[in-house]
Image 1: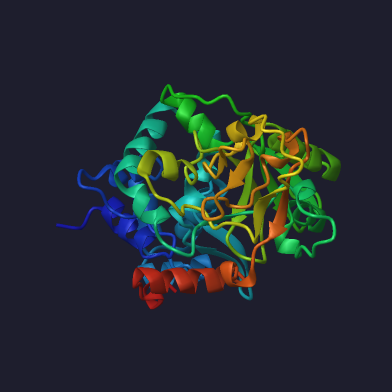
Image 2: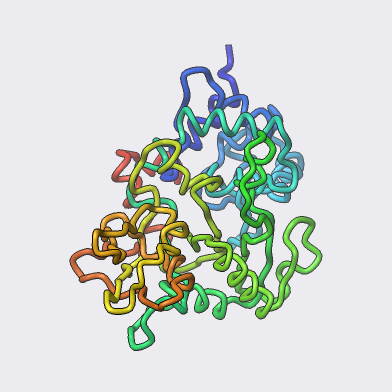
Length: 360
């Protein structure tokens, strides 16, 4: 009997550095079945991570070239696979489940898909979050860093926005998913930023709403004002999104509260510092720290737990006495950020004991 296409696809996705671990009751297969047809799953299970043309894929899988091309084009349009230019024309390849396939379902997620994801999250997603290098890293709210300090472009949220040529915003699938299962949080939903190096990339997009540069900056400020943590892909180049996260809904950050995993996100190169002469012991900052890194000591002065602080700077603007500020961590406490997604993938594959030749 031929193997279940959804099982083959699940195993293929788990062979990627990001991971898609199996569960005891097979909810990952039901999750894929809610997103892919049987025919789509069977074809995707044969794709490689590196892009191939439809002709190359058809020759390797024994399919008819035109039919394979039509299926690939439709899947790429729905965010199920990668698409990009190759020397031979448009090419298609595997996309991770997270970050990738799941987030692309923001335009079609319903209560059934939301519940399936929650079941999968509770059973298996901790295995994804527990591996280093982490999927996401934190970048600080810019005005919270000392002005005399060198900040590299990949460490600055506004620099990432300035480097882009197109900007867009979509709803946060994490908050939408939690709302669909009856557990909404009070944070804004329309704050997930998309970035592109090509001008007007999001004009007319069915899901992503195009923004101007100034509107993108305003969206970041609105997210920061709501106490949300800026996080991006954990590499120095090619950042194409900025998530604005909370521990109550974000699939990454709530791994701490829901799954008990400490280092679910790579911290920034900065850490909070308290000017004891300015701290008035008002405790306003405590409610804005999502990582329990701040405490009040017996002298009514805020103390920072440097191991728990991720250097997001979210609490800093809410300090009325300006006693808080981010400073650069000592060099021996800063783990180098992978140069690009390829280096990130190699490091993560090594940590997971994967043979990348299987999917390249």
